[in-house]
Structures are given as structure tokens and as C-alpha cells.
Length: 311
Image (tube, rainbow, N blue to C red; front, side):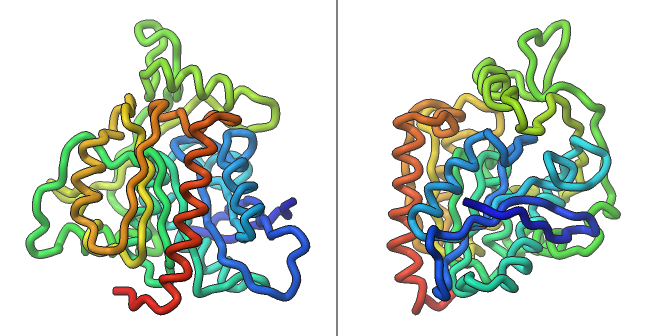
């Protein structure tokens, strides 16, 4: 169903899977580039199930683990940096463009939660992208203000394209559990009970390589910086799948709606119940609705985008 692949990003090896449609021949296929959300991995934590659905629909898929996580290289282990992870998408695009069997004019970036935020950033910078899919996007809890001179967007673009992101000014948090059932005796980064239940059920499965520990490298950003400033700069059509009752801090539905309203590109919004993790339960009706919406979106938009003049 897939073969193992690897590519370089920020001087380390990122590893993942390349899915190609069954009985693929000399035809070139659109490709979906996928990375999972906050600390999660590509094995057994549902992103792989979405990858299988794309493959069944005759798309190629590159699904990989972020730096420092899962089967990818990088130190310190379990440390995440939003900008470094975002850069991984750029380097993944470089990688798939060299592969036989991939239609380099039809490249899709996909993300969920934190990686939805990353795909959104990349989709505002890289002209090679034909479509963007974000699920349960973690765009923050406050709405963006106004980027009158575009200096904040330009900061984001320059940071993403910097070849030494880790060399930029940053601060690092102490290591702590990703989730915990005891917020008094053993506090965790994610405090919601739904997060604890999902990570323990899916991350706790054999062979996932998920570990219940995280530290965060925070690159210094200008005052009032917000991911929402990227909205008007998106290079391709976007699908936003948003949980109606998202309970997670940093994944506010009203903020997502505000950012959605700022987008100039063709855009589609799909509401799904079940909270932040509903569409990550497999099998489930939430997964089915989400996966079908994504495949239908790509069928429409990739055809339209063949003659679409991107910004």
C-alpha cells in the first residue's frame, strides 16, 4: 500500500510513507502532502486512515512525521517548533516534485489542528500549491487585528523560508506530559479530558512511536503577530473542516470563522460535530463525513485550478 521514503529538512532526515494508487501505471497523480498535529505520529493515529482514503480515490500521498517525532530524526526528541514543522512542508514539496508518477501541477497540503495552522502558513507562501485542506484548525483564541503594511505577513514568509530557523531567537519550555488525568499532581500541556482520552487510546496503541512528553521551542515573533494575516495571501483554494463545538484551547471556532471571512481564494467550510477529536476517531461517522468532504473538494478544485491564475 505504501513504501517508506525520506527527505531532508533543516539538515535532518524526515521519514514517512509514499502511497500510490493501486495498479498505478505511467499516469501522473495529484499528490497530497500530510503531516499530523500536535506531537502525534503517522502510525495508527488516524492520519494514515485519511491517507488510505486519498489513495483509494486515486491520489498519491506523502505522509511523514515531523522533525524530532516518531520515525523522523532530529534533536531534542519530542521538541516541537511551529516554524520548523511548517518548513517541513516546503521541503516535502521539493521532494515530491522529483518523484515519478506525481503531477507537479496538482500539489495539496493537508493538516489537522497544529499542522492545519502550518499548512495554512505554507499555503500563503508557496506558489506551487494547488489546494489546501485544514481540519480542526488551531488558529488561536483571539482574532487578528490589521496588518496594514503587511510587515507581519512578510515576517512570517521570511521566517518560513529562512534556512536556519532554529538559529533564530527563541525560548524553550520545560518538558512536560502532553496529556494527564491529574492536572494538580501531574499537569500537562493539553488539559482537556477529551485530549487525554484520545491520546491514550490512539497514541497508546502498539507501534505508534508516540510519547507522552513534549517541549516547545518558541521562535520570537513581533508583537500582534497572528496567523490570520496570511489569509489574504493564500495561493490556492482552501477547505476548512471545523468542529462545531471545538473544546481545545487555541482552536476557537469564531477565530476560524473570522479568518475564513478574510480569504480571497475560492473557499469551502464544513461543520462537523464531535469536538476537536471527533474526526480523528476511526471508524466513525465523523471520519466518513470529513474524508468524503475532502475528496469531493479536491475533485472540484483541482479540475478548476488547472486554468486558475494563482497569486
